[in-house]
Image 1 (spheres, helix red, strand yellow):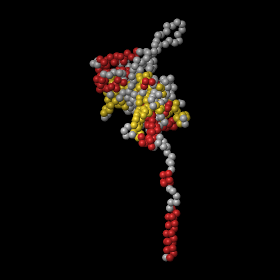
Image 2 (cartoon, helix red, strand yellow):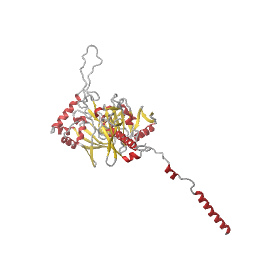
Image 3 (cartoon, helix red, strand yellow):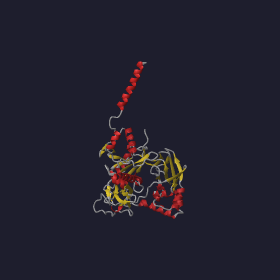
Image 4 (cartoon, helix red, strand yellow):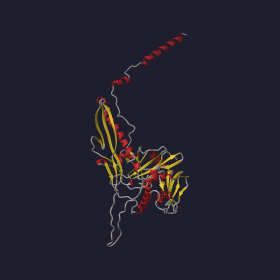
Length: 477
C-alpha cells in the first residue's frame, strides 16, 4: 500500500509539472495581430471573364451616335424563321410570323394572315420518313414546328448527298405559293420525329380571291424573280468580257438600298453611391472610391459583351442572316460542322463558343483521333481549327435542353465584316466610350457617380457572320 501511495503521489506531482509547462510563455498571435498591419488583396470578383469578343472585335468611331450600313440594292425577299405556339399536343403558327415567308414578306393584313394561319394543317413525321421527293410537283409550303429535317440530293456519282439540315422554325416549299409549276429541288426527310404545319397553294389562292391585298402581294412576289440578280440577290451589274473589235458595251449602274439599316449606340448605365465618410476615412491602403468604380466598370463591360451577343436589336445571335445559320449533322459539334461553317465565308477571323461547346468539340476530336493546334495569345493557349482560333465566351447561352451555338465571323470594316461601334472622347471618359460623371452629394452625405458605357455592333454584309445552332454539349459517346 505504501508503494502504491508513493506512485499515486508521484503521478499527481507529474501532472502539476506538465500543467506549468503548458502555460503561455509569450505573446499570442491573436493579440499580436492588434498591433500588426495586415496585407490585403484588392476586392475580387467572380463575374470577370476573359471577354475575348471585346478584345478581338475591331472598334469603329461613331460620330452622332448612329452608324449607317449602305449596301447594294437587294431583290431577294425574306427567308426568316417562323414562330409557333403550342397548346397540349396542338401547334399553331403565330399569324404575323407568316410574313416571314418570301411570298408574304412585309405583308401586314392581320385578318388575312390570321385566316391563313387557321388553314394550316398539322402533320407528324417519324424519323426516316420522307416528307417530299425531289422532282415531284409541290403545291404546299411546310412549316417546321419541331424536329430536324435533312435536305437530300444526288451526288456526282449517283450516291445520296446531304445538302443541308433544317430545324425548328424553318420552312420549305414556299415557291408553291407563287409558282403553279414549282417542283421539289431536293428530297426532304425527317431526321428526327417532326411536327409540321402545311399550307396549300389552293387555300392561299382561295383566300386571295376575297382579299385583294393578298392577291396584289402574291402578284408582286411572282414578279421579283424576273429581276436580274447575282447569287446574293443583289441587282446585277451588266458587264462584257472576252469580246473583240468594236463590240457594243452594256450600260449599267450600281443601285443602292433606299432605306439602309442604321445602328444606334446602345447604353449601359448605373449610379454608383459612396458615403462621404467612407471616402474620407477608409482610403488606406486602397482608395475605396477607386475600388468601387473598378468593380462597377468590370460589371458594365461584362454586360456590354452579353448585349453584343444576345441583344435582339444588334446582338450577333439575333442578327445573323438565316441563310448563314447551320445545323449540326449529328447533334454534337464535329470537325465536319466547323468546316461547313468556315466554308460559308472568306477571311474567317475567329470562332466564339461556350466553354462547354469547346469541350464537346474536343471530345469529338478525341474520338476521331484528331489533335487541334493551339496558338499563344497574350500568354493564353487558344485552340484553333483550320488555323482559326476558337475563343471561349460564356455569354453564349446554353438552353435547358443543353444545346448552344457556335459563332464564326469575319471582322473589320475593310473586310466587310463584323465591327464594334463606340464613340470615344465623351465627357468624363475613363476608358474608350465609358465615362464616370460626378453627380453631387445629397443630404445624407452620399456621393453619386453616373457610370455609362456606349456600344453596339454592325454586320456589314450578311455572310460576315455565321452560326452553328442547336449544338449538343452533354452527349458522351
